[in-house]
Figure (tube, rainbow, N blue to C red):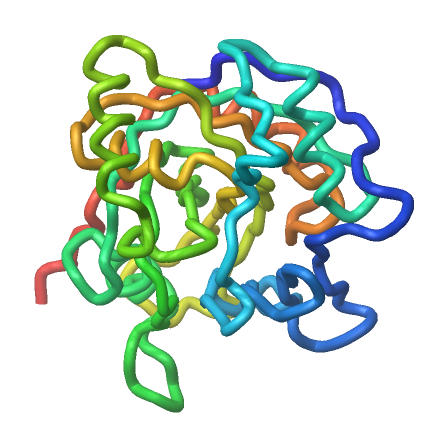
Length: 273
């Protein structure tokens, strides 16, 4: 569910940021860095390769503050203080704030529900070199999907900066109690939209994949609690309008698509032999 959206605005620190995105013109790999260390490898810039987020050695920290510098906990709407506070972590660029309601489902790579082993393989097949599906090297959350058109489908993911196994059990349980009491709270993420499709039809279900990926900045314990209890959670997304693999027209269309009802892609039928 899309709860609220606002006009694009410029965010990011003038003195440098803790997060950054490599750009295709600078290097072949697209990488999300944290404190200058590679944290996630992203989809290859060409747009015909598979969508990707692969955890690297630099994904070791969250941005939830400390006892001396606590996080600004977002309110129920598009909280300007939270947008400003988390915006300072980002490279200076254009972002669109979105407030979503998500129902996270924790996914283990190569297990049932894994996008990379199921929907992606149906379109691209397995990796031609390794003969295996893409392996993201992290657990992640699936939260939403819907139809874009007859030949395009949107998938949404929430990617934690650290594995859920690093979360403190007592804090997860406390947030689960909050959710049960009707106090969902809000997680915060920086988000990218990658639009990818193979150059040629090479799988059993050829179409364009719209991949909306939220890299979690704050709310790791809340997200795990929501997944474990099956309760919804608010997500404040700062959508980058420049770092994703999507045309400006596609990014502009995203809020309308995200406001649509959830809808699974029909299983392709196999012609009779």
